[in-house]
Image (tube, rainbow over all chains, first blue to last red; front, side, top):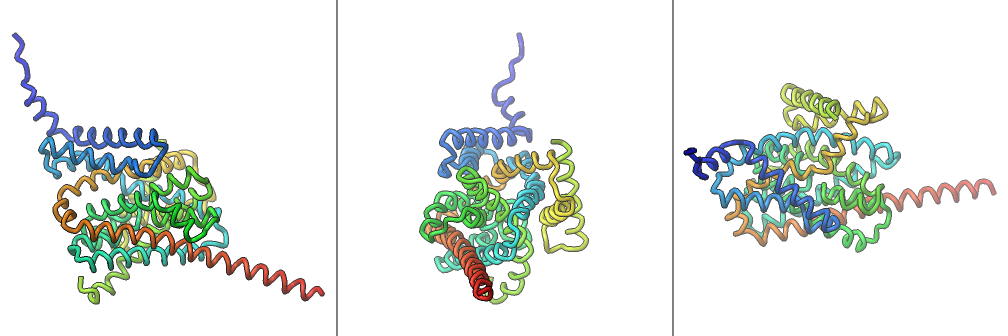
Length: 246
Length: 128
């Protein structure tokens, strides 16, 4: 008679393999993405949020420690740096279009991200959030791959930063059309730039689906904002930190 | 597609080296981005392979931060206690960011329009 492997042995073997974490991560994202496309790219059906929630549930149910999961999923995580480098391409395409507007856009991005950081940090701090949470508000208005790099350098939690960034992207993509109509801005390039600063990747997808020019400006703004923040934020914070008492 | 990936990895590697030895304040990938941007500006075009890879990265950027975001599990108790503070901060900050960026650009736009009109008027007056 064949000696059959008890199911638990198969399980022990599988869960020890990095492949397992990769499968959960990619499969849940794929599912989220399918739902997102099915929902006509409605920002409420965010593929990243769906994937994160399902993966959390899966590893919680399977009683897999996060460290174990990350051992496998780090192969996906690693590509963040490469994706950051790839942002040069949309920035370059934006550059070609924005002759004469470079200075304006640069000023707008700097002001926009300063407001973003100052308001988020101030509100979180005033409402009594922990230092961990307040610290992770600094980089949340930058696209996640760069935000996490900044977070590591500021020695705040990259995880919370990533989570806040994802939520910011969702909120931004949902709210952007209303906000932009409220401040009466019709020019596509201005709408796109504002969405790129405020709503990251998800906002860009939304912008592309409405108007191509808006999409190009949004991609450019997201990348450029990341670069400006990555260089500026650590410098500004080393001077400000002693005064903020954090 | 492979050649696009290879190019990105090389720029990333160059950026990491630069960050390690000369500019430790700036993350390596950001330096890689700047180097690639400078290269593209000098060259005046993006090759097809690179454009293809860059585009798929942009489209599925979200997938790459799933592993880190799942770490939210470790922070759930902390986030629950401060849920109100976190959500208020995020919502208000998003609204202000988008509104302020748009308003600043709109102001620049109006000023440059005015200046153009002013110049045109000026010229017409001189002609008369």
